[in-house]
Image 1 (cartoon, rainbow, N blue to C red):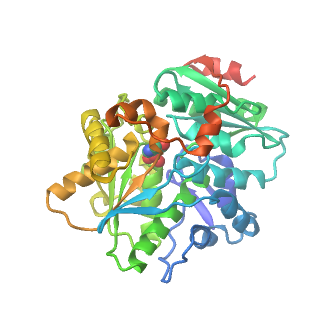
Image 2: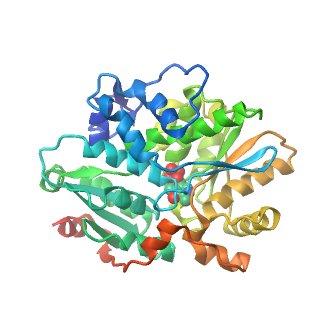
Length: 420
Ligand SMILES: *Cc1c(COP(=O)(O)O)cnc(C)c1O
C-alpha cells in the first residue's frame, strides 16, 4: 500500500516511509484509510497487531516479516485493570523500559533490522522528553549495524529516567542538551534534513513521527476495546495522556479501523496547545513549560499535522482537557487512597480528566491509558504516597548499571561535531 505525505508531494511504501521517517517534502507520512474491519477481533495482542498491520504491508518487502516483527515487539502484555465496573486502566508499562514507548520502539527496531542498508552502521538519532530515548536505546541496544544517539533536555527528565538513558553503553550514547525537549526535537529535525549528515552517518529517525512507532500502537487499544466488549461491558472510551500525540493518534486510527472505541479524550499537562486544537481545529504551538508529567512537556506536538490532515472535523473525533501540577499530585494521592494503586504523573493527568467527567455525571465506560510505571517517577510519587513504589525487575536491572551522559549545547554545529 502507498502512504502519502500530509503535504501531498511525497509517496512511499510503508517500509520506505519507515526508513525515511520524515517525508522528503517536509510533511508526515499518513497511513492510507482502510475500511473498518468486521468482528470478531482476535483475542491476543500479537494477533491483533498482525490483523491491523497486514493490509498496510501487502506488496511490501516487509510483508513476509510482519509476523516475526510483531512477535518481537509485542513480547509482553498490555492488560486492562478494572478499578470499578466502568473504569479501567490499560497498563502499557510492562516492557523493558516501563513505558508504552517500548511497543513502538521495538517494532521499529524489528523492522529496521530487516531492511537492507548500503551503510554498514546506521545511526538512530532520537530526541526524548524522557521515555522515548530509553525505549529506542533498549530496542537497538547491542544490535549489530546500529548505533543510537539520544538527546534529552538536561535537568528536565526524572532522575531515574536520566539514569536509564545513560545506562545502556556499548552502541548507545546519551547527550544531555542545555535546552528543552523542543530544542532537542529541533536539533534532530535539522540533522535529518541535512543531506550530508544523513549520508555521512546513515542517520535514521526513531521519533514518534515514524510510522514504525505509531502504527503498532493501534494494537493495544483495539485489543483492550474488543476484550472489553467481549466480556459484556459497554463500548469504552479511552482517556490518553498526550504530548506529541503519537499514542492518541494510534487510538484514533484503531477506531477508524473499526475497533469498538466510543470516544477518545486527550489529557495533557499544562502544555495545553492540543486542548485549543481540539476545540477550535486550529493549532498554535506554544513554548514548552516544565511539569511533573515531563514526558508530555511538549509545546509543538509533532503529530498535530497528522491530526489536522486526517480529522479536520476535530470535534467529531476527540475531546481534550488539561491538568496542572497540583491536580496531578491530587490524582496520584486519590488513586492510591481509593484503589491502593501507585500511578505515574502522566497517568495521573488521565485519571484527573476522568474524575472531572465523572463529577459532571458521566457514567460511561472509560479506560485510561497508564503510559508509564510509577517507579520511573519515584521522586514525584513516593513523597506524595509516603511509601516506596516497588521497582519492576527490568527497570531495576538498568538502574543497577553505571550511567553516563555527555553535555551538549542546543545547536546544530555542536550536534554535527558530536556525531563525528
Ligand atoms: C511519551 C509519553 C507520553 C506522551 O505520548 P505521546 O505519544 O507523545 O502523546 C505520555 N506518557 C508517558 C509516560 C510518555 O512516556
